[in-house]
Amino acid sequence: MRLLIQSILSGILIGGVYALIGIGLTLIFGVMRVINFAQGELVMVGMYTTFWLFVLLGVDPFLSVVLTLPALCVLGALLQRSLINRVLDALPQNQILLTIGIGLVLSNTAMLVFTSDYRILSTSYSSSSVRLFGLPLSTPLLYCFLITAVITAVLYWFLVKTDIGHAIRATAQDREAAQLMGVNVRTMGVLAFGLGAALAGAAGALVSPTYYIYPQVGGAFTLKAFVVVVLGGMGSIIGATLGGVLIGVAESVSGTYIGSGWKDVCVYVIFLLVLLLKPSGLLGKSRM
Image (cartoon, rainbow, N blue to C red):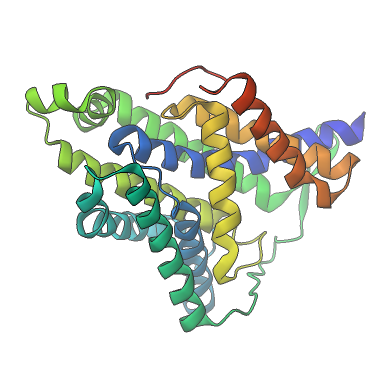
């Protein structure tokens, strides 16, 4: 029983990161109706940014979130203005191909600049643990979850309590009606993509002390983010949060009791079951 509880707690901690990536993906989809298949590569950019900030300037990975968030927000806004904005009215296939292409460009650029070598960001607390209810938990994952919770709470407050947040939600609910009410929907699209990229970058910064850093690492995060969003319900931020935690728990428990090689299989089996039994997601929502 202690092993099961520890596995569940560890899954909740890593699930917070999956939720953060999924929230960014669902925010972009909710506002622009574009599925960003480059979301994982943006996580990779955040990981490399954090790594070099640590190596060159000695910035702690968790403190580097303060720098990685705005940097990735700017990158996302530039990608939206220069590329994504041109295919908003195009066929969905074109949008998907474009975002996949952006991801390929980012990963291959990282390979050219940094080579394909695996890198490790080692800190004084990378392998340390703390005890919660008598159970040992990874210190980096605990810090990661706490910072993720703060970022998610701030984002939720921003979307619910501010005028810009209301405009983003209005655009997500009905793009034409929001435009008729004076909302600049194109600006909201740029902001939404920037926020989605910023969340991906923050997730990359938070997981960098516990993951290998290499150019192709983004592919796995893209798949996880897509599973999280579909599981929770496309366009639902609360659903993405729930989906991320559930996927993290499923990974941790299956890795403990079945084997680490089977944890991804279990996640994708859950994904297929949700598609078959409840395609709209656990919360049954298709919009934010």
